[in-house]
Amino acid sequence: MPNSQSAAVESIAAKTWKNGQNILHDVDVALPGDHAMSMTKSHLAQLNVGRLLEPFGSGLAADFVAALDPINALVDATPGFVWRLTGLGGKDASSIDPCDNLVTNMTVWESREAMWEFTYRSEHREFMQRRREWFMPQTEASTVLWWISAGHIPTVFEARERLNRLREMGPTPEAFTFAHSYEPTGELVAV
Image (cartoon, rainbow, N blue to C red; front, side):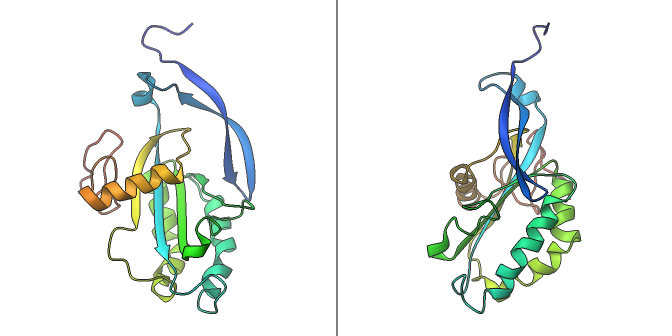
């Protein structure tokens, strides 16, 4: 029986994209308003957006589109990866804003270190180094990080609110970047 300092936790079903397939599994999530929310293990959520120079079907974007499946397979198998946003068909998120040539990428990681390893030390790095070939130059922040309770799956709306907060206020514990990062406790990470 839980003691008075224990918090209510609910087991819910959540969909996760892992190893190339949607998996329905149980996760423990602190109930809203409970003290457990602050005591629950945190995961790192990430959103990045970019506008392609040319439409998805164009020759210029062909290498980018061809790399989506291998890069998604790589992320699915990466230690510390928790979840990624997928659109219609469940393969990738390219169908979310196809009319605007806007590419939306949203993932959840067990830690900042796991995401860093994937982003900058895996084959993804080579792919990322070619982004200027495919995407319009950014005039404002295009990537945002924020901590969430383990088990929470962020929505695109939530993620875009975080990106807007970063653009308006700069890095804060609620919306930050790798360069100006915060701990789940709200403390600035010393670089």
